[in-house]
Length: 393
Image (tube, rainbow, N blue to C red):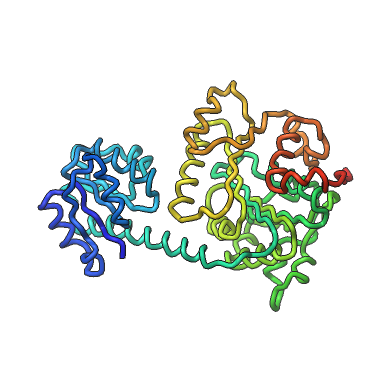
């Protein structure tokens, strides 16, 4: 088992830790005596492959946070607990990836909860990572999940237009899944009035196979298939995580592309889908909260060991007038911007009309950027295989 390192600790606090934690973790505790500020000091600590590093209380609070930030940057899977002295800025600690904050006066219950909680969290991350490594391929499809932690960032607009674009490359080989099970708008964005939704799928008696599943798909005039969200929020609550995984796995085994539109945040259904995804599109708006939330999601991905899917960072409504430069956005998110979609008044007009903008306004700058994303997913050969877009208003 990976060790729990007490770095910059004092003898009295180290004894408190030994007495506080359970027998199952006590054998994993190691007291680190080398100064972290020495050349190679932090690297030597990380070479021990720790599960948890407890920093302090023999360190200045600012120094502890600096080391916590370095550990988070180099080994995001390591749980860091800071023992504060004067008082650590909680927001700064969270930004540094700290899992728990203690003081020298913390009681045994608090110490045990912080350290055992961090250790259990890291163990779960490792277990998830190992599960992903053992997981077989879900099929021949590219499963592309469009993700943004903030509502209103434009996920549904991007998802639907992306799916329509891919359908021109692989007619009848693309399906979009509306995973916003309570308030999904994919059908609305595509101008559809579906007869069936995902609720009908999970309500069907007997085993589910691809033949049965296809009965519940809605066909769009662009030669795209749609798995629509339930028409009532209460019905969405009745759809379990395992059902979603089964549906996407079956679709991935039969289609060329599966595009998944997700709700805001990271629901259990979204996490289950990400386990099956080959590509993830991180979508952010040109505002500070959107970028900050996205940064937290990316760090969570790294800690969960979710690194197998190819990542694409798309900046929506890119407009320098809002005061955030492209460089600041990229720096805050920790990713290079792959695609910048401009602001256009035609987007909400097209959405309200139920007409994807790449169909109704193919020469719009937004449409051109969406085609760039289609090419990233379908490959340069898409120019040779792409069919004329079909659509009836």
